[in-house]
Amino acid sequence: MAVVGTGASAIQFVPEIAKVAGHVTVYQRSAPYVLPKADRPYRDSEQALVDRLPVLGKIDRLRTFLYGELLTSGFVLSPKLLAGPMQLWRRRLRSHIADPELRARCVPDYVMGCKRVVFSTDWYPALARPDTELVTEPIERIVPDGVVTADGTTRAADVIIYGTGFKAGEFLAPMLVSGLGGGRLQQAWQDGPRSYLGITVSGFPNFFMLYGPNTNLGGNSIIYMLEGQIGYVLGAIQALQAQRLAWLDVRPEVQDAFGSWVQSASRTSVWETGCHNWYTTDSGRNTNNWPDYTFMYRYQVRRFDLAAYRVMPKRPAMAGTSAA
Image (cartoon, rainbow, N blue to C red; front, side, top):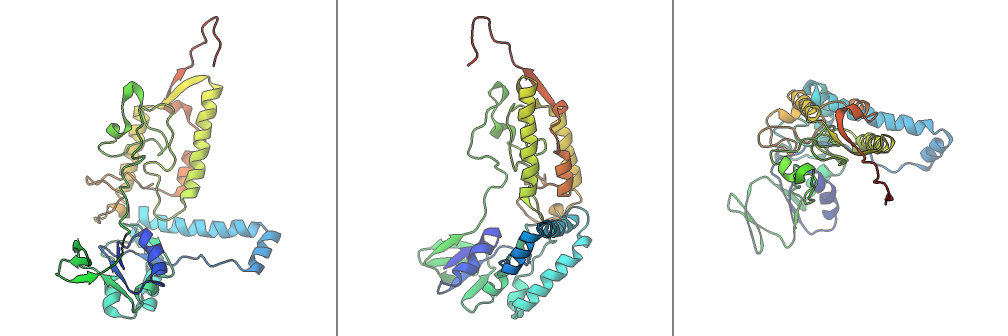
């Protein structure tokens, strides 16, 4: 069996298929940073204790949140703040990969966080299995009986699993979204997605997104971001109803100012340290990641800001007609 890719998907399925496949060959373009994933089952005694003292569950969640914000500090402020996570990664790599040649192939050639950091406790043990091979030679072509790499070696494979990712910059594809004057969102985003708070887009009234441009994270919970976005969208709907508005549309100057801040804040981030990643476009513009702490995003979306939007009041019903 062959696996192409070593990103977030492969990290999850390779350790599982390695348990049942006769042999697994993993083809790697670039090595990921792998940090431990604390996902063991809770003991009965722990669950009983949290049932009696619910505050302990909140404390545990806060601990996880603060660990994510520590990673964020290193990603958006200075890589020097990643000294702790780097030490943890090195220690786990040394403890699980005894073969120095294999270990060398598992060492990334970029700053931690420039590409997505992944979390797993069984990735390195899976690579160290005698029936698993990690190949770093580029793939030249696929042939009927396997995979040929650039050095001319053919490795047999009866099954190939692609863990090669997706087009992260094509938000909402293949949906067709039309705005004012019949403009298409795909056309408006032909040079890369742009939005306000990752939720609204100028020229597309009453259009709201969750997990839109520049709301992805490198080190914390997307759910935390989504909770803030849902509250913001609900506030917009309530404003439409309370103000008797037909539509609202974020002002272009507001969206432009937000976009300028995102790009300025991103210049000091690890995402722009030179590696090839899916966070930025070919021109180097960050279209995916939030370049600050997550609690700062929640602060910005804590309430819907109607002043940032152009509005169209509802027209009064014609005399002698009834509203549908």
